[in-house]
Image (cartoon, rainbow, N blue to C red; front, side, top):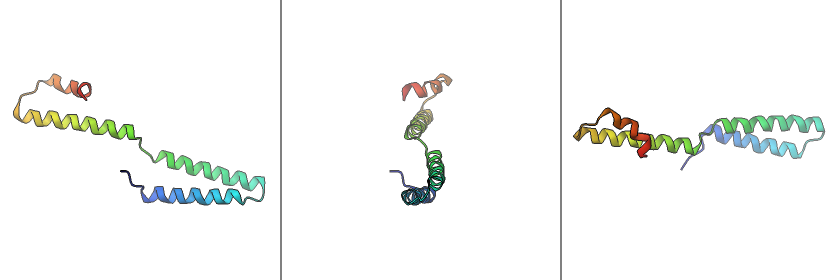
Length: 89
């Protein structure tokens, strides 16, 4: 359903490269440096994601607005109806 963007793919590739570098680290200082970079990459990947719940909520609200607007074409709607959008859906 959701395709990865080019940026997400590049971040995932970089994470895999850093994991391989962690396995071949020769000193504790080098290991710590790779680990800091890996943590930064994970943070970037998490910032880029929009939760599925947020997308679902937005879709439901848009669907409610569409239903009201399509009904309004044939019938008169009181202003109180717009307050009911979230209650209905």
